[in-house]
Length: 602
Image (cartoon, rainbow, N blue to C red):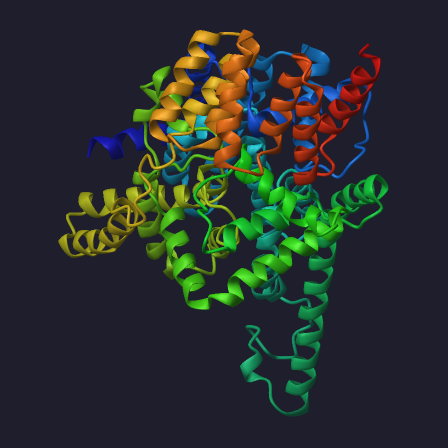
């Protein structure tokens, strides 16, 4: 079989040569993609989460090393970005190149950890598949921590994998530190800890014991010891295994806490509250668990997000800790009020996670197909998903040896269910499916070569459920969240002062969603910047009619009237904005300026 011959040829390479080949392949493909997307308006004008990370990194560069309020995101990535900007200047290409580099290194890590239990063929295939997997390529070029989190998780896995056979405490401390750094980037990895502790008890604590063998007992066999000697032996066995588990688990947790505690201390210093790693976790839990919300993609930015943020504020819950408790209570309420609907919702989310499509979050992923169509033709979840499920089923017979793979696979899958489901959050699951996918391919090749019809039929029987589960797209996710790309594009073109393109995109947005207040608000922004104040006011009023709580539109109408000298009308709209959002600084400042201007008027 030609494919098998190619893998055999790769097997003759030295490990260093194999890793270099995988790294260069991954780097070349990613650089090709990075070069092509430079033509995208988003490349030098980041939006939503990218813009927030970029802004935070610039604040760090300007001397604000310690945050003054509890941040929405984890601190590791913005500080990393700030360090890059410190030496390379504020350059979006270099910032994105860091993701390319770290993603290419992750391909080597993935090849290495799969070689240990499965052999070089599977390792090489996994590395090549990771190098060519288009969602990895896409997320490596975004100003987001996706590639960094992937690298850190694989690094922690690799060290734990080594600790399985050589349980030195330094390995557990090192993996704990890396898990801590990963959690301070994006905390979801901490939800894998319960599964990891079970693995420690079952695996590490049951390695060969150091208890002396009873005289004349060869080989070591607890079953051949009887009476009081057996009781003593069992007692000492349990004590040693328990001690070993406590030591390893404690050192692992110590490594995590070394990173987590200072971050929490900084949160306490900034807010006076004990807040976990970031403020968005509890809110994302509510968005993910509520059966009445569409958990496919983020609702940022826009009035829906603003209204959500106003909920705790209207109840005078202002501190981060109070808001966190509010969102947890709302999550439990959403689950408890309609348990049957919630169960249906969880099953629906399982199909989201196993969808063949990449679900966008904030910005439409497939927009970049306009600049690099070839990349989007490379292997995706439609291939890795079914093969990975098949390989995981085949590997069950080696579950003791592969226990850590199953811990991360099942742990990350379960940890994904309570939160929002999208491509970026599924990314952490893919490497472990990818290892099993490569294992399935190599095993299938062996069975074909051996002409074992029974085993080939068994393989196909195991593959079919995965194909149906993934590629049937039972949740109907294909292209369902693309319409807001026009709204986002219009906002970016507005920042670029490219008003004709901004207008063209907002017209497209309104044709797709004619009653969307966010689009009318953006239309008002475009007219305002073009100096067409009458049309701007008309658009803002339309947004306000569609969404009476659109405080940004109310403030904008007030600004237009103040510019025209209609101070009483302006004050009315500023006050309306403040009634909706009492802490809206822009409206409060505008109201004060309006009063000052009115007093100075002759």
